[in-house]
Amino acid sequence: MRLTALSLAAMLAASATPALADLKPGTAAPDFTAQATQGGKRFTFKLAEALKKGPVVVYFYPAAFTSGCSIEAHDFAEAMPQFTAAGATVIGISHDDIVTLDKFSTSECQSKFPVASDADRKIMKAYDATMPLLSYASRTSYVIAPDGHVAYAYSAMAPEGHISNTLKAVAALKTRR
Image (cartoon, rainbow, N blue to C red):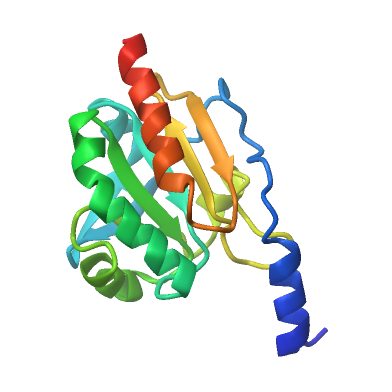
């Protein structure tokens, strides 16, 4: 089946409605290791290692350099002082290749947090963060508690809400410690 621009737009519009993330709070977060980049400098990101430092915000986004994804990356970058003050790590994940993410991490993320490549889409599938009928990540944000369990999950195609909601969830975790 060949997708036309109109059918692709219809599918994107249908998937733009808010949906609940499938990994519910209390669920063990799937561990992962991925090639990542921050400020154009590549490294291996390991969720288990990051959790030793505190909660981790794992946010999935459809594609680098698209309007909503650029807005979301910019907003996360602007909020990094608040995430850092709360002891949280933030990582963005998409299917983009690492070369594209080198540029995205510098420009859109302002070198303030890493983004990881999930070219084989294994991580997004493990987190139930894929768009129906498309091979792109859904816009889904998770807060993973230091014990490795999902503390908060939110899915909505609009970038608004992801940063404020995850900040509140991280703050709630901090008060429970």
